[in-house]
Length: 124
Image (cartoon, rainbow, N blue to C red; front, side, top):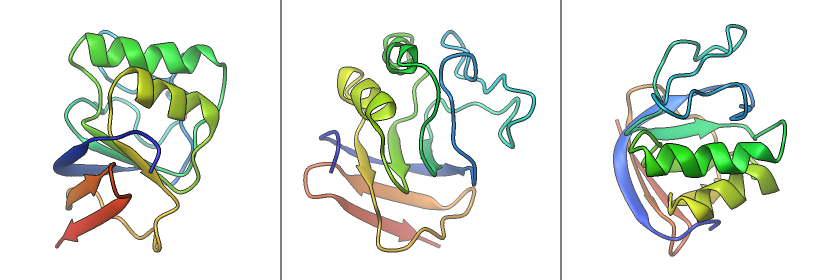
């Protein structure tokens, strides 16, 4: 458990790390890094699943701004959380868990996370 809260929704899955600063547009929630597998897709309203964050500490504030703009993911699952994403999720009140027992999520799956108990449920 990283950030408390519960969320259920469609998974948006990336096998690569994400840099929120310069990689995600805070006003739209769209991934704007042309080299990223999620390029031109929106994180808004999704359970965002990715390996870990990367980049500048400003990424925390980008996540916070996404939340303020109503364009944030409704939940985050990381293979291994790092401080930039963790702080952003906490500031933006985005439920977040890390280090799931398995990491075989698929785009479009319905995923529920419980940031109070660190639980993840997947519906096929």
